[in-house]
Amino acid sequence: MIRTHDAGALRPEHVGQTVTLAGWVANRRDHGGVAFLDLREASGIVQVVVRDEEVAHQLRSEYCLKVVGEVVARKDGNENPNLATGAIEVVASEVEVLSAAAALPFLSGHEATFGVALVVVLMAVNLRGIRESGAVFAVPTYLFMISIGTMVVVGVLRWLGGTLPRAESADLTIIPEQGLDGPLT
Image (cartoon, rainbow, N blue to C red):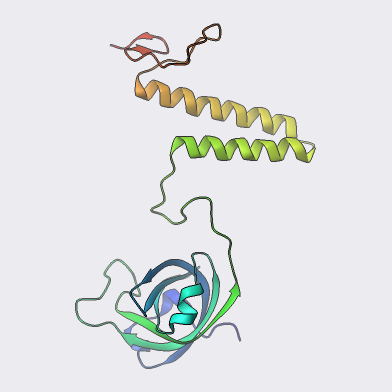
């Protein structure tokens, strides 16, 4: 049996029960011998407490885990009102890594923000893969991605109040005070 309960469905009425959960590590906080994991799955997020340092040390974001543990109430003042499961946590007695994950090239989660430079680099990597794959739709997709990338760069430059460098110019500086359609007013 992979799970007995959904992580996001646990509530204070489950306190004292032993549960088996499965999900992905959304966040990991290490507090010297005790690790706090936010275990994420389709129904929501629950905090898991791992007291075994040897086990906790190997766990990283996006690892897929199976956790067996007891549901306990959080201490007064430690509740998280932003989570539906914020009044409880699961103290792990067993942690099994179902699937390890390589380090991601970007942050995951709703708080992740991406710089324009990173987006353009990832688009270029994606374009290279499309071009080398020889797929039927490679050329239209490639052209579409180039146009999207160009719109992103042009939009950022317009927002910054600069202009694109001229093709005949060896100078690749952005001219402040000058927009793409002439001087900014």
